[in-house]
Length: 260
Image (tube, rainbow, N blue to C red; front, side, top):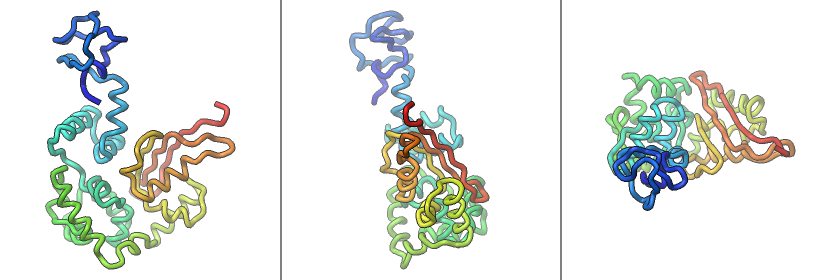
């Protein structure tokens, strides 16, 4: 979707309601592939951005870490091939397809340690530990752009070449066991063996129609379980889920009752 008259908020049924340098106010739009200096995004263009932007841009916006204006600029820059800065933990999820829960398990620390590292920065005594565990050069822990994704893919390959790494990712330290029990009994109401897989999810935002390509295997399983229909409810169309610093889940779903 491009910035042109067809995606402009001032296009009212083919009549221009803007004050740009292509069409006058009230003039009929004869070529909607043009664009002027008064272009403003339509709701359809907004929907296009928030559903098709790469997840490493959508998640910071959904988490209120960046404003919509910042998100829009990053979206435009990324599509123009300009390198954009990415939080290292968002970049790892994008390239490695592992969560902060997984990182905590690999490091042998609690979830809160990784949560603080993402939200407050990695403390000096943990830098080497993070870099070694994730097979990353230390510099990437503090400054990552989309230009570094090729290097991150090489780091990912080293990470997954470690002996028994997949078994380690599936392991259940005590804090993760408690998380799975909480998911099973209170939030998702699922069998414990399913909850153990869902416990790998740290946070996700999903709306029906959004591609699942960028979600991890555990996130896709989470969405599939929550989005299923029941006798009382139609399938869910929206899901927000995240873990707080104490590793307690918070979840919101939206679904319609059958008959609505």
